[in-house]
Image (tube, rainbow over all chains, first blue to last red; front, side):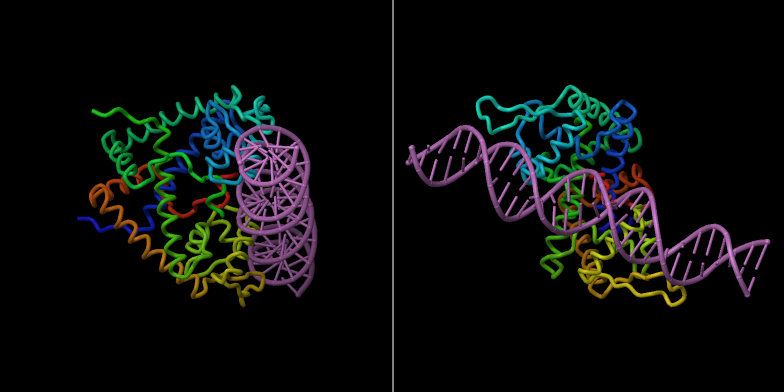
Length: 155
Length: 155
DNA sequence: GGTAATAGTGAACCAGGTTGTCTATCTGTG
DNA sequence: CACAGATAGACAACCTGGTTCACTATTACC
C-alpha cells in the first residue's frame, strides 16, 4: 500500500517523458542528415500537411498570429523544408508546401517515434504502455492537433 | 487484441497531459490572486527554493547561462515574487529569495496539483494512475530538477 | 462600381536565450 | 602580504519567436 506521490511529480514526469522522446528523436534525425530540424519544426510541418496551407490558415491551426506563422514559415523556407508559391486563383494567397526534404523529415520522424515507442514497451511492458496511452487519452483533449505549441511555455 | 498506435501519439499525449495540468494550474492560480504567474515562473521559483540562491547557481540548476538566469530573476522581481539582497560575507554575491507572495504561489501550486492529480485518479483509477507514474519514472531521468526548461522548445 | 473582408508584409516591441566583455570582489599561493 | 586567477554580477549585441498596429493588394459581395 503505497503513499500517493505529491501532485507536482505528475506534470514533471509527463514533461520529462515528452522531452526525452523529442530529444532522442532529434539526436537521431541529426544522425540521419537533418541536424537543423528543431522540435517546433516537426509540429509545424505536420500542421502544414501534404496538402499545403497558407500563413493565415497555419496561424489558425497552431493558435498563433498570422505574422508569427509567417515568420516560422520563413525559417522553414530558409532550411529548405517548405516552399511558397502564389495561388493562381487568388493572387493574394501564397501556398506553403513541404519540399521533398520536409516530407523526408516527417517520414523519418514517424519511423523513429515507432522505434522509441518500442523501446519504451521493452522497458515497461507492452500491456502497460498501451494502458498508459489509453489513460492519457482519457484526460487529454481529443483533438491532437491545435497544440498551441510555439511560444506557449514562455508566454 | 488491439493494434499499436503510431509512435508519434505517445509524445503528443505526454505533452498534452502536461499542458492540461499546467493550464488548469494557472487558471486556478489566476482565480486565487496570481494572474501574472507564468508556467516558467513556478519552475524557477521551485529551483530558487526556500533557502535562496544566486544568479550563477540558479543558472547551473536550470541549465542556462547566468545572464539568462539574471534576466528571469529580474522578471520575477518586477512581479514581486523574489527579492535580491547583497551577501554580507561576499559582497559580489546577491542572494535571491522568495517573497511571501512567491512562497504563496508555490504553496497554492502544490495544493492545486494535488487536486488535479485526484481528479485524474477519479477518471482513470487510483491504481492505474500510480502505474502510470511508476512507468514514467522508469523511462525518465531520476533528477527531476535540472529541467533545462526555459527556452528549450524553440532553441 | 464601391465597400468590406482577407492575405501577406513590415515595424516596433517584448521575453528569454546566447556569447563576449568588463568590473568588482574574493581566494589561494609564492 | 601581494598579486594572479577565479568568481559574481552586469551590460551590450544579437537570435528566435511571440505580440499588436498599420498598410497594401486583391477578392467578394451588395
